[in-house]
Amino acid sequence: MSDQSSKRNDLEESYLLQIKKLERELRLTKSAYNKLTTQFRAKEALEEAMFSQNLKQQHYMDMLLENTPCLIILLDKNGCFKLCTKSFLNIVGVPNFDYIDGLNCYDVLKKNIPETDLEDLRDVFRKVADNLNHYKFNKYIKFNTVGEQKYYTIQCHRLENISGGDSVFLAIFVDNTELEEQKIQAEKANRSKSDFIATMSHEIRTPMNAVIGLNDILSRTVLDKKQKKYLTDMRTSAHTLLGIINDILDFSKVESGKMDIVNAPYNVQKLFDKLHSMFIMIFNEKNLTFRINFSIDFPEWVIGDELRVQQAVTNVISNAAKYTETGGAELNAYLDKETNELVFEVKDTGIGIEEDNLPNIFMPFERFDITKTRTIQGTGLGMPISYRYCELMGGSLTAQSTYGIGSVFTIRLPYVPCVSPLNNIEQTSEILNFPNLKILVVDDIEINLLIVSTMLENMGIKADIAQSAKEAFEKTSEKEYDIIFMDHMMPEINGIDATKIMRKNDNWLSTVPIIALTANVVNGAEQNFLKNGFSGFLPKPLEFDALKACIKKICSQMNKK
Image (cartoon, rainbow, N blue to C red; front, side, top):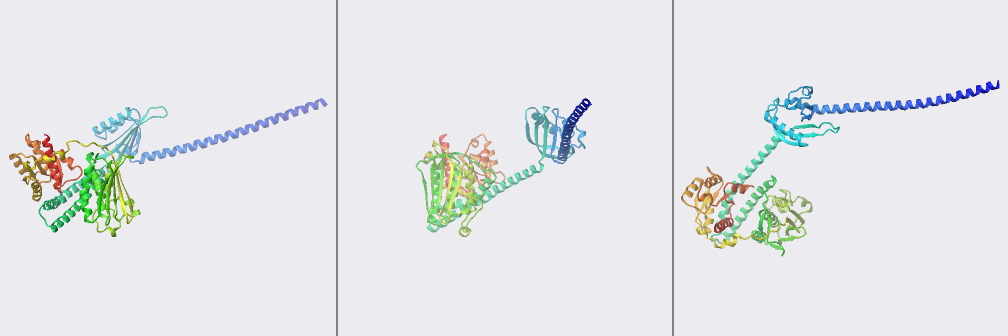
């Protein structure tokens, strides 16, 4: 019995061990099952979220394709449609993409745009597909459904397939018709403004030519002290008005981006002489001092735009003269060897500028401290113009000031050295014989003829005159002239057309110096005259010294021949 009992106990223990083992395996299986179930549910949730996100992205893509105003097409390597926007479907008259899915784009487009436009697009698409990754151009295209030409900016891109498949071609058409029309209108308005400025320049300068010219002529006659004072005041006022006109014209050129910088060799020392002659009387009349100082190593000749340099420095000195009541001003010039710059420094003992106003000193039309400056003439454009000139020449204009004590304006310009040019005109001017010159002056306004002919008389020259182009043709058919001074704006045949007619002759008229006398001084005017056969250009109001220098230059060239 004991043996049987022992065996039963062993068997029970064995069963218990098996049961515990099975229970443990069951718990492990259940744990693994729960883990797998959790992973499966997480995967399902992730797939559902990704599906939802894809649906959202697809929805946004559909919204984009449906609502974008741009014409967008996606083509395969054979030029067949893979995708396009609703706006493209509308413009080619197709209700649904299924109608053109897989069709060649040229087969679809040729039914909707002219053959010439299609060929232009085909050429660009081919270039991008073969050689370029992207290309952008502008073109007018007439779609049949629109009925009129539209101005499109077209961007073409070749997109490489990141999965290793064939590349695709993307073209985006942006309708910029309204923008282009606005641009055309703006350009038209700008041309109208330029024409208006040119007309106003001519209309204002023509009477100014009479005022300044007659003043110049009268100043060379015998006058008493009071008469000379009247003439000086008249001349100062006339040049003030002319300065305002020039400021407005120059500001317009700068604002429109049409101001050209013409670099050439010029004599800086002579520029200083001009500035001194120009301002010494103005400062003396106000009992002020004016000096020009330059360093011993300051160059005599440099390369730059002499006219713009002179205007920039003149405006700054003129400003000093306006706003200084006691003391004076000085121009200090030196070469900054560290920066390789020419430095023109104008110091004055004027009213100065308050610190808060300094940042605005180069803004157009700005006037400060009105109670002290209300009697001072000017447009408020001189300093802004000088500032822009300096920028255009690659330099700078800065200001420092202490209110009530004075100001310092500093112009810095790049220094480009230059050797003194040979064969200067001034070296030969002494031997010129003016009285023997045969000169014809052509102008439809009698007072202008009087001014020029009187100035020439003061040089010992008896000139012939003509009041129209036709009269000039008659005189040149009867007599050969050394120089012809030709007005621009004349009735019937203007100066440019008259010069073109003269240049067509096979005789002396084809080479005779013809100088334009004109009140048209807008930017590009001189180049336009030279392009149309003129030999030179003299602006009105005409200055005696400018006329004399022009004749000297022509005579010098004659002597060389």
